[in-house]
Length: 415
Ligand SMILES: [Zn+2]
Image 1: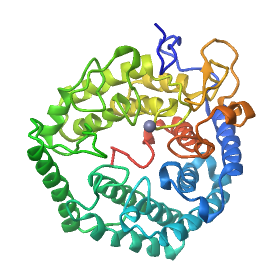
Image 2 (image 1 turned 90 degrees about the horizontal axis):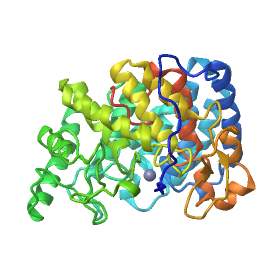
Image 3 (image 1 turned 180 degrees about the horizontal axis):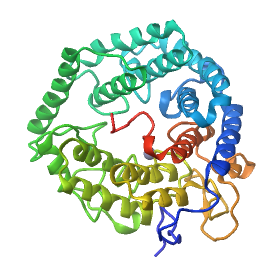
């Protein structure tokens, strides 16, 4: 039976040689051309800044910053950084005027992420002004320290405390300075744990720590070994249900960064990096096998629930194991040499539909700017965005050029 969510992977697996035609010569011009197209689509009006790093213009600013850090784009660096500054300045003005204090503390959907990227861009440009957004970022600590600061759930990555901590970690990595004091970090961690205990008690769950977000009891907890192992035991054939206790239907399973193995893999990668237990690495490797089978997603090129998000798992596994097989697999998924798909009709329910009939191999980015694509995409804003659109894909392509340094955007497990 045909899988609703992904195309069958008809690629031959690694046999000791990397793909040809996927070197710097092919990828660098693709990245540059894709960025040009993205920049034509980014709104420059402060009324259009919704979505934060996830699918707002701020994510594009991060992508430009990330590309500018790669030595292969030294010629473009200055232009990319200046453009990033223009974009992020508009977002900063927007979020400064945000009335909802809680959204100001959000990492992927709100102000914390915008201030963090502004600080990175300013610092990269050599501007001492980077302390201004950094100070705004630091001041948000008070907002997210109270245990139940958000009604919808205060602990997750997009708007909650885990996101704020994650942003602080990214900033520390990129700016090479301390962002929060050890006491501030501990206080946030304690709030996350206390909140998880309270919820587990209230709901009488067997899980040591439990969290909910908008009423859904998501599986996704970090830092506590008991919880890591509990989560490891929730595996169902190399994948995890999005919700506690749900059974995965094979024909319809979610294999996305946002829901499933390509996201959960980072938890076990981090666990393995910290304590070197082989079962954590094995779990990651198994996730990678599932992604190789089911990761050619029908929802476009992005990192959240698209093909670049799947392919990032291969770069993660390459960094964990050093095995070139994973570079090969990432190349196959990359589309830098063209996806093995032909464009077919699009439906409103999908970001991008391609039919898996080889061999025509148009550069995938071409299709994304056609009228046909626009007619079929859920949201035009997604086209340029960091998590659903091409900006995340660009980050992935740049990481394919520097696999030893590759990191999922804004969420490196290697720091
Ligand atoms: Zn998603």
